[in-house]
Length: 587
Image 1 (spheres, rainbow, N blue to C red):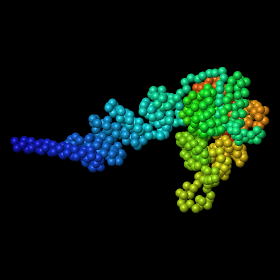
Image 2 (cartoon, one colour):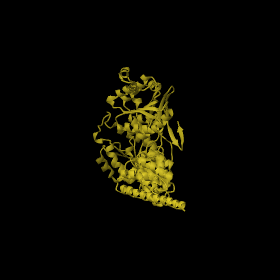
Image 3 (cartoon, one colour):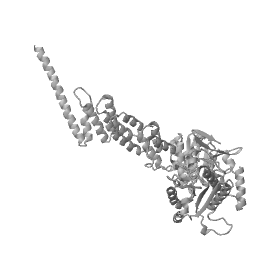
Image 4 (spheres, helix red, strand yellow):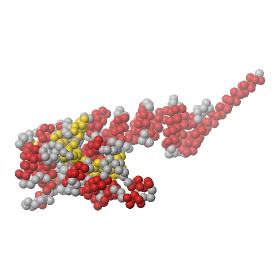
């Protein structure tokens, strides 16, 4: 009997102890929760900490762990919070508030730019009550990603995620048309039924065919400043371009392609240009060529967009000219396109994946250099040096590539000496975004002096510089990017030159050649595809030029053909690539 009484007393003691423990834990939890609610997160963490351990006397462990993690996050310790949330998933997999845990984990992953991990965690939340919060979290996070390539990568790995698709489409649509991935944008709009108007996407749906097309040329002819003599005019570039256009009109007429040409003198002035655009006859034009200079561009862009009239700039490579006007085009490849296409070519030819980029002082130079850098780095190349070179400081090129023995000896450490030198054959190529003669000459001189195997990549305009001869280009394995390159040995060029000399008594200039090829190409495009020739261009991958190599406007507002010139024993070789359904065409 005594034994039985002792046994009962023992279990009564155990029960009371457990009850007291639970009461104590409950009071501690309530105290910790009060600290949490009052925003005293550091103190709350301390109070919750001992309650995070699960045992039979502590039913508060998952709750304490959760609030400990949230307090840690709000106190500025996201890694601590993440670790505790992961522990909750492992220790309490069936806990009723697991959706909240996963939401917090997704948020922390996103803030650490671990986007795919965050998306995977959020996908596990099936409760409809969380879906609006999840969408808002994803939209806020992905809208903060500035690089469209990062968004493309996310879309590639999560092709059914509507939020990623919406943000990516908005990002693409905000770019200038020349830089847009229009095929991907079309895919996103079609797949997710996105609102074109909301994305400010304007698509030309149908062309118009005519027996005769009216073409306006808006050039700064400066007629009030021209003098009736044979001297070279201040606007000779403009006149030569127009003369080339006129000669092409004559050639087209012989082929029963009728173009009515209307010339207007903008004087390079936006006010004068605006007055011209007020003429009723301008609204009935099928195409506008020009304007050439920045002051008049904005008003013509607005006019072109409002009245749905195609316009094309024959000389510029500035993508800002096109902006987001689907009726605006560049005859040239844009600076961005030249950079990307050159990188595509060099990626296959470079001896190693280390390179240097030099660029000049102009905006065109820097845009070209940045586009090249971004594309070549996407192939896994490392840009060891990227430097702007001012004309007056072109000596810097020699200082970078040719370090004197004296400077090396002056270095105070082995590390200092190694930082001063670019080891032989350590650099695969140097990309130069500049037409400047001093910069090109210094690069060529430095590479030749080094005597290693660095490939030099530069502009076709270097060929006009007397300082460098053909043998030097060949010896150094130089590659020149050559937009709108015109071979002079063809029958077509000889025929054009002969006609031009006969009419104008002087050889054609570069701009006269461009004017001729421009109008021949556009005349045939109007005849074949109608007023909105871009609908036909979008279906083609390579359209022949008449003096130039050719044109490609497949899903593009600028010319995608960027020839590369190489130098060999048999002479100059022209290479270009056109992407055609994942298959390159080469010549």
